Length: 190
Image 1: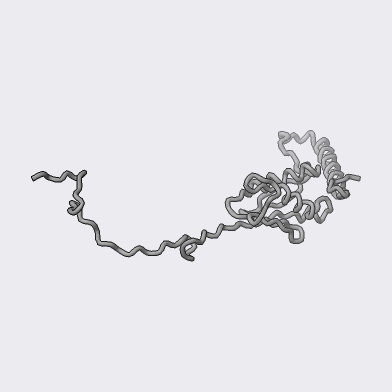
Image 2: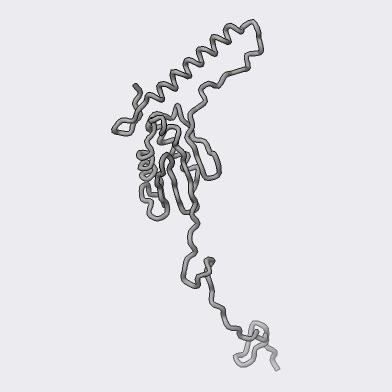
């Protein structure tokens, strides 16, 4: 008698017993709605708070909103947001609702680009206030340098320097407050 090798099988005899046939369960997607439905993409909501510069009249949320709508890239194409990204404004805030993955850092980059385009990047900076929020704030111009070594003989010069810095700070603040936005959405200083 010839023995059957494991690699050779006879059509009528099987060397390895097969498990009993079990009914196959219907496969479900992650959303649990049955076969054929794709899982819903997770949305994330970002906020850019522009209240301080808008109150001073040097930034327009309407022009910032259109800038973001034109510049945000989806699948490598700028301005074609589709259903993946929604940009809207509520009072002095811009709200971006996007499907993940969407980078908050990308919003900071575009905000800085907008500030540079409108020549107000020298007075404003973008600060993260929480995980999903940025705020436009003025630079702290009154920042005094206190590393003069502690010489008491130069108190008169320190007072003069402080007064000069305060006057420069006030003049800059007045200049920013007096700025207005022209019809091309550029900041004009008077």
